Image 1 (cartoon, rainbow, N blue to C red):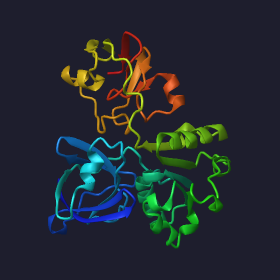
Image 2: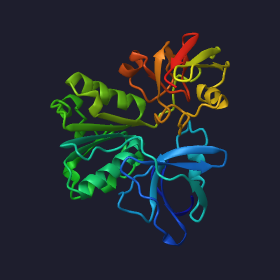
Image 3: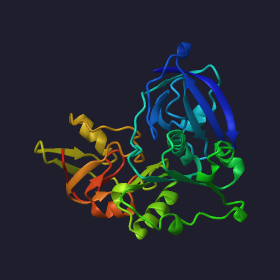
Image 4: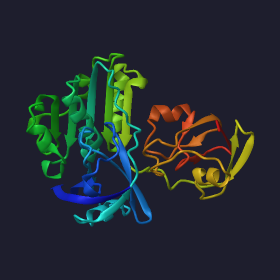
Length: 314
């Protein structure tokens, strides 16, 4: 879709809010809480979560952080002006909200608040039971805090600020001490924040099926060894060679094997593939440490193999 940037606001240090609309204020395709869109920025494609209430069909709202380590996407977004046009995908969702839950606990770290905020609006409007915990380093660098502090539902939105220890710190063991099969946990933010929340939930006895996460962190392990190896495709009884430096997903595509993908960075989980034998070399920011130790799934967009053959359920 071709959309127009109709509003751009600097809402915090290095964070801009963008409103994207269709010509003539046409209704945009619907989206569910936790959804994101692919934004095409020349040769780059980046995924940004939709942070407004899904009931709003007149615009998509994004919150974009420009970090010093940005590889071009955020810098290009921040260089946009009102009136500029963008090409975007229809909404996709790898971070779906389970509306049947008795209670939901939302954890947001930094810019990870964007998909969580959409969930907040959705559940608040429907009077669904939930609570939110938002961790920030400093208020000057925090997005959308005003939406939470000024809300009549602010009692459900707990904000913790590293630079203001007097307001209290997040006590994960206390928040997660009462696991229940009817409760669900959602977390988005930096990798370390996600791992801390999921580890605390695991220690408290939460079921893995009730834990949901989305990461914005780029895989930190992408510069490891890049020797060639073979992929054995169990369903089709084919073997595909992965050359040194070649991405697994590219080798599969070249062989005519289609694996759905989105971020191509190991953050979204779209290309998650079942491993039947062999040991993956995990280089993603999506799987937890516990999930990696099972070696039964990997992300072919960024991960490789520690063994000479990796057998996949393809």
